Each structure stands twice: as structure tokens, then as C-alpha cells.
Image (tube, rainbow, N blue to C red; front, top):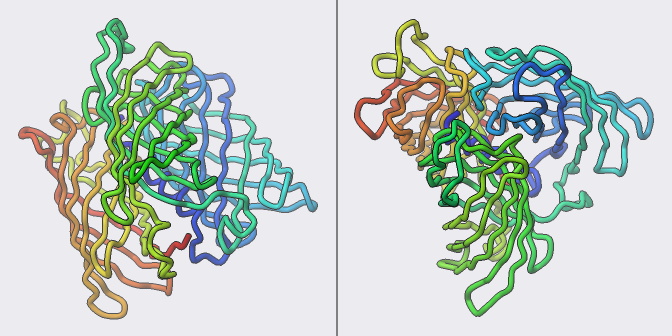
Length: 476
């Protein structure tokens, strides 16, 4: 799997941040987390962790994004990402039934070949613990194309709901405070081995983190990151807590976290990891800090251990002077077709001429027209299970009239997996999007682009993107 699946995690990180902000929303958001234990597993994937973040369109239906990560067995690094919907059927004041459907794709840990398409139909018995929390007993039918996974799962989970005004209106969640872009270098001690048995090289990560205020000196954080060098295909999704102490203009902090990781032949066992770090943050403007930290990371049941050095740039949303204008965003969900022409495959014989990807992206507007964008794509067709890419960049939106607008984007990221020739993984892309406003809160979007590896000899696919774009505004 491509390292840049970090942006699959990143999109979920940003979704989580937005769900815990105060979005302009009629019904609010819901977050579900559960364990799917696979009945009679035929691969090293014996169980998946499920994280779902959905927008509630009514009291009984939500739709959003789900990500599934290997958590039982010996397949740390298997990740699947896509679109999911959940419907609720109340039975009594406390009991209810829920039904869910997921469509997406992915792969990893050398357990999936072919298209990597994943389908899941789930049901749960829900018990209301409080106005915002449910306990769930779950069962599902799971099918992953390209792996002998086609059968029942069962498990336990929780659901958290925000109300229509957002999480801070009695929902019990902390305030969404900041988003951070981070680069991390991980160096394992000598003697550490990869899954195939070779010496473990150093790994460089890039990723995104969302932060939430608990108290003036403590925060919760959630992050997604993937390998930019040293272990193409490695990815980690983490959550943790930080305690900070002001020291003049700077802030010292200590933090710890727990999550899931693997891929890139990094031996994380079933996938669970823990991390700890100390560091300092220094403001460079009213809203932006630069952070440096030193720490360590360790697999819970695998042999991987490493020292970590991280550098981050953090954008805080609570330092805007209380203007009340909020932050403009746009979420786009859809599909992208890539032309698998000459140079696309490492071994092209008998391969498909078009590869289908599902795409999720977020745009954060810096001004009226300019924005920062992040995209995450995973394969759903074309015989390249495990192929994924993630990109970040800048865009500029040009309104043409009340319904039509054009956007131009330049992006940089990386890709890999599935036998695709990414020439080391670093890719660049340019894209033009045309949007048509259908309703007050959504648009149809089509994009034409060109992607290419930055190193010679790699893929150079033309791309066609189709999706639905939803502009929205968040407030603290």
C-alpha cells in the first residue's frame, strides 16, 4: 500500500475535527468505532478496527467516510477506506437497531491481490448509555475482492452523536482547536528486522493532526501519517493526549498516543502501536506555531521500535480575535479514473488500461478564492489492490456566475503499491475543476488533470475526476 494513504487518515482526521467543531448543519454528526472479528479467517487479517464519521441528514440516517484497519492477527498495515451510510431504527427509548453499508477499497500486508474492492453490510443492536453515547453489539457480512475474506464478522462498538449546534452544545466533546502538518523521522535500533528479515531502514513520515482543547494546558489529538521514504506503504493512525506548560513565548509539552500502523514491510505484528514524545512549540504568527519534538514509538506485539524526531506547522483556530466569520471549507467525495498507459505498471503484461480510484478531499480557504487542499485516493478497480496516493497543494477558485465556477490546483504527494510504477513514490499533479451548483449546499464537480512521477521513468497518467462537492463553514 502506498505511503500516502496517510491522507486517507488525514481526511478522517479533518472530518473528526470538523465533526467536533460547530458546523453549519441541520442534524450534526456521528462517530462510530468498533471491532470486527472475522469468523473463520483464511488470511493473516483476523479482525478489523472500524472508524466511521458521518453527517446526519435526519434523525435516522447519516452518510460519511469509513476506514478499516487490521488489528487482530499478523497483518498490521492492511487498510481499507471508502464511503459509508448508516440508518437507525428506534425500538424503545434506549434500544434500537442500526444498519450500515460500506463501499471502498485498499489492501496491504501482502494479503489482498486484484482490485481490492471491499463491501460490508452491517447491523447492530444499540443501547443508549446517555443522550450522546450508544453501546453497540455488531454483526456484518464482509467481502474483500482479491482475498479469501467473504463471510461473517461480529464485534462490539460505540457511537457518539453531536447535536445540531455542534459538539459543544452539551455533547461533551472538547473544542476543535488546530490542524497541524507534520514530518517525522523514525530510526530503529540496529538489529531490528523487517517482515522479510532484512535490516529495518529509517522511515520518514508526513501526516496531518487534529487537536482539541480539554483544559487551557491539555489537549486531545488524532493523526494520520504515511511513509515518504524508507518504507513505501507504511501508514499509521493515532490518537493521544498532550500536556503543555508555557515558558515565555514558547510552550513545552509532553504527549503520548495509541494507534494502528503497518505496511512497507515494517513488522508491527497485528498493528497496535504506542508512542511518547516531549517537545516545544514557538509561535511565528498570531495563528501559526512551529513545533519540534523528540520521542519514541513501539509496536505492542511486534518487534518494531524506533526513536522519533518530528517537525510540525500548526494552524490554530482560536486566535482569530473572535470575528465570528468562521472558516470556509469544502469536502468532495467521488471517483477518479487514471489512464494506465505506457510506464504505468512495473510489469505491464496483461494489466488493465484504466484504474478506478475512490477520492476524498478537503479544501480549506485562506481567503475569498485561494485555498489549501488535501486529497486521498484508494483503488476500487483495475487490478491494483493496495495502490493508493495522497497529495497536498494549493488551489484558486474563479466564480463565473451564480452556478458555475472553475478551480485550478497544483499538488504534490506520493503514491505506490499494486505494482504501479511510481519511481520512488514522489508525484506531482495539476488539475482543473469545473463546479456546477445544484442546490444551496452542494455542487457537482468534474476535474481533468495530469499526474507524473518527479523521477523519470515512472507513470504519467491523465486523470478524470467526478464527484459531489459540499461547501460548509465551521466555528469554534
